[in-house]
Length: 438
Ligand code: AMP
Image (tube, rainbow, N blue to C red):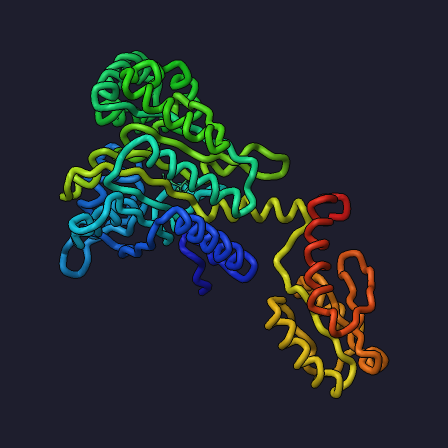
């Protein structure tokens, strides 16, 4: 009997894995430029950690956790997100005790949520994120949002909208919850059973409901922005102004409340602008300010702010863009030699080119040119480098662009330089004429 992957999980193979590595590496680099240090916490945590942090009114805790008793009878949970584990780690290791605040951590790793799988939604997925804890304020919030935007730009995503809102202070939230309770009690009979529970537990959660009929009702619900205290409103406006000063435009979304209970104050999401042929996979990344989270899990009263990106969603958008622009992962060169003698010389040449930073392969046994071109195409090589007897005698090689079929004779001593500029031009041409040939 064939054993299939568990529903909602997926294997990440070859080019897709390259893409994940590129995204994770880029995100880690950008975060370290902002001074975030890496932290790795366990995938498995005691269940109460998530009940206290992500919150008992959240969909995650209510419906989506992979929770089970271990052989010692302790309830453990596969982490649905990483922030809670990082807070636990700060407390367990007393990281706040002797450190300069804020503590700043970056992370990457798998998360587990028992959700209904669909485009951009998996049961095992990967998040990259950061947390800054212990020096709250408008600049720290703005820094995290800026860093997120820089990551998106660095992985090649320019058409991104930043949505922002504020959940205000305790007083604003209580007034807003009361207003929501009054509004939804008039409509709750027509709403889904989850919303009925949410009305009791935390009416803010109703705003996250994805049921189309409920969404219609939610449209007319009171807006958080109208319940913000003057101080909370001024804080939000200051963060927006700081972001503007570094060229980041934001859009206030009064319905943005996020699905985790620990957020207070500023919350935000990054969305890819709709584009023909690219599915909407929801928020690429999201985050916000949390005032009480560390304390909730047994730590000191230090506020924090964080953001998390879904690597699957970033990979999907980048892959779609690459396909639309005719760009693919592949070797820079495929080196071809027709005789054993040339293959021997090519082995040295291939080694030299790889040392020069190019990726490539070569044939190790004699084959027809036709067969070698087929291999080169299958490997996604950008250029074939053809070495024949005559070329060797003249210390030259032929370099063929496998997309345009243009062939150039290049002096061996110039090969590295010429290949560099050819590859730059290859990408420039791709961007200039994206779709015609595809
Ligand atoms: P959250 O932890 O819910 O604030 O989500 C942060 C980011 O993680 C989202 O913006 C998504 O990019 C990603 N994400 C959340 N849930 C899933 C999922 N089930 N599958 C894939 N990505 C997810």
